[in-house]
Length: 141
Image (cartoon, rainbow, N blue to C red; front, side):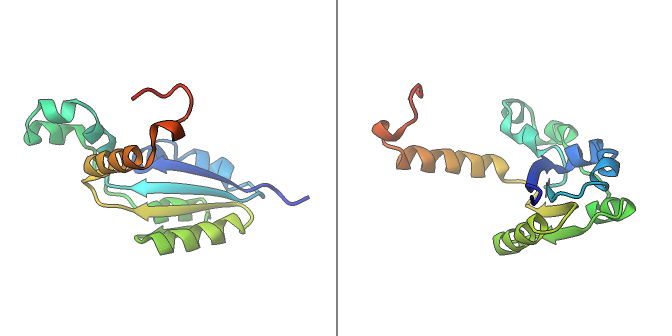
């Protein structure tokens, strides 16, 4: 039977932190797509209350931009790499990678800032679209 494909979504720093895992991924025969959201590191901290509690200069110390290329890291383990900066490119890369035996790294290039505002807008849109009767059981306003 054909191998079930799998995908993993992780941030650029998580990818870099566990780069040794690529040695195991390089031996896989089933499709595994490692989607790396590259926003120049540490942007999840923009979602935390600390972002509002300190000056932008102090907050800058929480960010951890890296000077490395996921393509070079992937090449070191002989794992195919695709870089995407649009939704259409990402969709095509995912379709191709899920049909390819073995691991593939798909790098999603996203802006270094703005995730917090995007998250807020997404929450607003979801709240607008979900009527009280459509909310999952147990959810509270």
